[in-house]
Length: 297
Image (cartoon, rainbow, N blue to C red; front, side):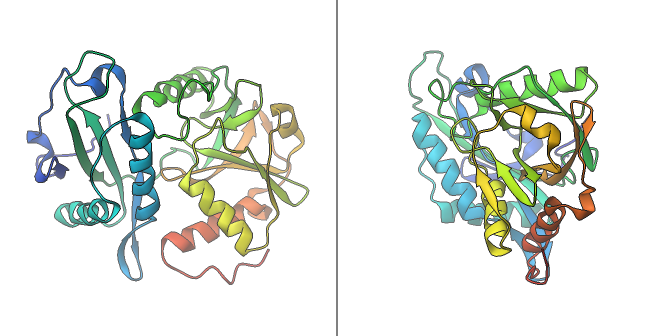
């Protein structure tokens, strides 16, 4: 069983720093019953310049945008949220950590906009998201939702029921993780990470629409631009992956994680010789505040 806090863990909860073990919430909250809330996943790193949260502005801007899209009132500024997050890290003596801001709604059993909204920001020591350094992935039978039915660009709590179902299905079939398709049968993303594959010296990734616009995904695209790696955002069917050279997931929790095989078929190129490996190294150097300009493609 995972342990995210102990008796000494401090969280930010509705304007105060309190012990996680003593925090209380209403069991009749809208988020508890309907999944109507928004959250973020953010990492901090012990860098050569001290503890730094990676891209806090982008994460908190997305949290505010998620709340706006969902109709959840949320008044904290990006600067306030960033300052609070650094205090949470400091009060818990954390450097390499995972931060979880959660905006959740008060008691309301009707399907209407909330009148009471709470904010929690917690942090814990969370190493690798995946238990394996390379993943055996399957094409999931669980599709991503229709983008006309939900605000797919919002990081909403309830959206992750879809992700849990896909990961559970994959593990029941003997795989490490799932790769999900959109409503048209195109490759979309993993349950908690965006997807890239390499073929003939070029990277491909699904366009926005049925996927979460990941901040790590955007960082990977920035790395590609900086290192002159060709990357194309377009739709593609899963069949196209079976003659690809390599592939990887990327996300805040997952960082850049190797995909070893899809539906039991391994990729042709060794990971160490792939563009994904170059990006993985560059990403680690960025989050640790080290230069990656020496990386040669």
